[in-house]
Amino acid sequence: MESNMFEEYEQCLTRFESMIKTNKVYFFDALEFEAIVQHYIDSGKISLAKKALSLGLEQHPNVMCLSLLKVELLIFEDQLERADDLLQSLEILEPSNEEIYIHKASLYSKKENHEAAIGMYMKVLELTDDPGEILSFIGMEYMFVENYSKAKVFFIKCLNEDVTDYSALYNLIYCYDHLSQHDEAIEYLNNFLENNPYSEVAWQQLGKQYYTIKAYEKALAAYDFATISDDSFVGAYLEKGKVLERLKRYNEAIENYQLTLVLDDPTAFALLRIGHCYEILGAPKMALQFYKKTLKEDPVLEKGWLALANFHYRQNELEEALNTINKALNVEAENIEYWKVYAKIQKKLDNFNQVEEAYKELIELGLCDLEIWIDRSDNLIKIDAQNQALVNLKQAAIFHIDEPELLFRIAGLLICQLEMKEGIKYLKRAYKINPDYDFILEDLFPSILLKPSVLAVIDEMKNSR
Image (cartoon, rainbow, N blue to C red; front, side, top):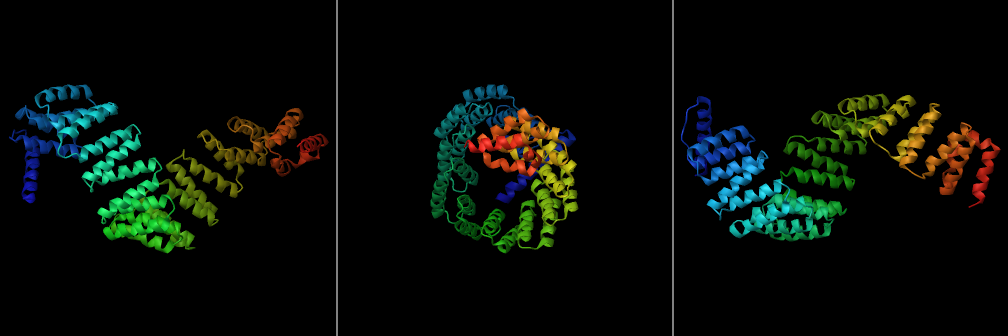
């Protein structure tokens, strides 16, 4: 029977597309038009859906299912007022038609009136014999307004109606995560699994909860049950690999990641993790092979480029590391992490002018970390650009007020430039905040410690504490 229905459905589509090509007019009943329009909507072929709907309404102008599809397309195209007007007229014709209220709720949601959408879905619950999907819709509306506690209630009700609604299960666990209710999520999933012991998705979600609270052995057991329930469940093998890495069982982690490559198309994530495991196991050739495979699979993956560049850096293959990070910057020139690695490599190569280029770029990209400002100033001092270093440090002090690491450096630079009065002011301020950082003076500005006036201030500040 199902085979016959599928064949009829295919024949309808073939006849319709033939009609479009030949400009002939064929007759289809309303249900056939509904199936054709819905097929094109689901396929993302909106222009064909609109054409089919237009022809359908010409042949069947007063059929509710086609009018509702018109509402759906109007909402999709943000023609919300037209959709609202049509729904009002349809409601007068069939005030007990639940589909009308589902579309009205969708319309309210699109207008970001989520409270009204929830009210409309509540009305649908009074009319429908199949509440599962509606309960899930209500849960989603509560998620839109970030009321995760109420959303959770409706996803649980949805799962009570249909234990196979994995979308509702994922959303429910998202709510638990957002509320940081990991123990409650574990309790729910364990109860769920008592009645549905072969739900591989529930086992996987339970494993993720145990992983979050660092109960790695329990997480591993949950993933084992997930793969027993479905031995082709790629997601469970990936998660299991992550747990095995945490447990430092790298060979077993590799086995699980390798399984995913057999069961499905290779993923850059699995290839990257295999490379990481081989590197930890002291197998650099295998690590390199898989890092390169990662980038072949996904040439724009940030973690892939960083892994390969850092691998060469750790192997002291600095030219290879630099070549890799330059390629990464060609892919994404404004990536902060790439510029950090570029700076690190150039620093190791003693290319301090290039290091300055990297720090300047990082600051222009909006990175205001204290470490970056300090590293940049120290690098500028190395290339004898004291004025630039001072400007850099004073800029940094705007973002990081009263940081002794900055104040000691500013004091040292000012005194070196014979701006004694201002330098002493910064020096005293630095000592008042935290004298433990005065090693900076000896490390970066040893010459100023030969000045009696500076030594007198240092003694004064130390004795005053």
